[in-house]
Amino acid sequence: MKKTISGVHMFILMQKDLEKALIFYEKLGAKKTLHIPSKWAEMEFFGIKLGLCPFEDATPRHTGIVLEVVDLENLYADLKKEGISFTGEPVEALHGTLVTFEDPSGNRLDLYQPNLDKLDKVLGTCCKKDANQVTCCKKK
Image (cartoon, rainbow, N blue to C red; front, top):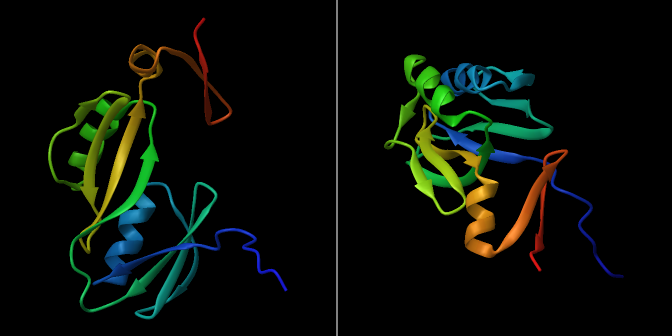
């Protein structure tokens, strides 16, 4: 019998302090859907299920989770005022601007604002964004 994966159930982030993590992710816009104090929590985060799991040895690590934003400069300033810990200043890349931040347990995530004009120059394409999806075509 051929085995198939039907989808991604959730992403789990290990947490030193579950209660602090809940507050942190709520500040980012996540909605708590399940909470067993000191044991486990689940949140809905822009259509993605996020599990928060208590773990004593949660050391800083980059998760690879990238959150797309419309106005990185203003969001960065607002989140700094909220006490969010960033690892540095926003960086201009060939395809947009990004900045890395940490949750209360040191899990590193990125905020990213794409720049389709810059991407077009680099790739020689004509990129556009429709309904949260970027599509590019080759220029003739």
